[in-house]
Amino acid sequence: WGPTKALPWQHMVNVVAGIMLGPFWAAIVAFLAGTIRIALGTGTIFAYPGGIPGGLVVGLTYRLLTGILKKRRTALVISSLTEPLGTCGVGGAITWYLMDPLMGGAFRVKFGAFLYFAAGWLVSSIIGTALGLLIVLSFERLSVLGGIR
Image 1 (cartoon, rainbow, N blue to C red):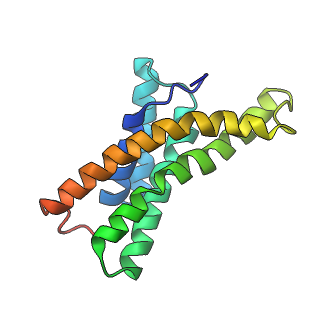
Image 2 (image 1 turned 180 degrees about the horizontal axis):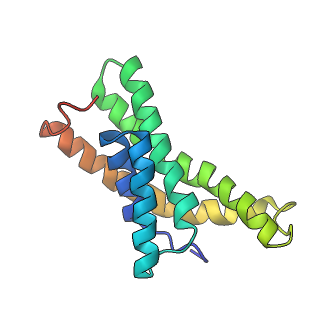
């Protein structure tokens, strides 16, 4: 999508890492995934502001919900579904603010610039979130997530 080169597997990794490793390590994993994507030519500098917030939001939401909800599966599903919020909402806003000075203030008055990044990531994020959710639910069913809180 435009200059961003969105890729669903990074969002899938965000979901799995956010739940299995927590918010801090999910951010580190997203940074490393972005670096690998850039090195391979499948990503741009937008892999960082587009990927890191998604992993953080999933990890933080999962930590919060496991303390509140009694059903672990519900916490897994809800926290997985927050990845697009982190990627498109938070990541899109960060990208908008980072790009504005580089573009001479051209984005300042145009909310469409935010939508340009967020909409491009949304499709990729939804696909990756669905894949990540399937993986996490499979892990839970196989008791791989047994010791993870």
